[in-house]
Length: 165
Image (cartoon, rainbow, N blue to C red):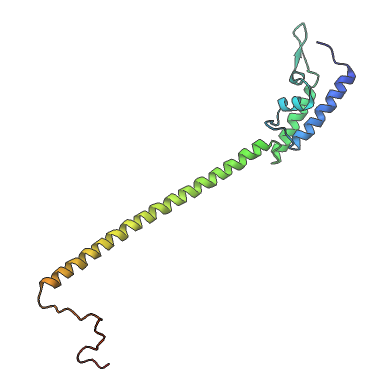
């Protein structure tokens, strides 16, 4: 693998900083997140440059863009701490969680109202059935007892005997 020249490294750092600014402003590519993978893809550099390396003797050394990865993470944490979420997907997830909670509350309220109305309907039907049974009982009693007289219906349009009209 060829070594990076100082000019290439400076150009890559400028591209990484520009991509970092776009990501932190919320301008993510479709399917992208506010993470190092998306940052590397938007800047056109490999992701391995953001992580520490090892020398041949096993001693660690920083990656060429590790300081930019630390800066990106720090800025991202600052945005999250102030309540600004740079990742639109995370904002969408939060919005959907709130919407889901609201819908669950609405469903619970509707279920309660439905149970109340069902109970009312059952009570009303049972009362109507009891009233109907009482009316039927009184009709049978009136028909079987000869002491009750049937009133004339309104078909004759004449005043009954003894009325003052």
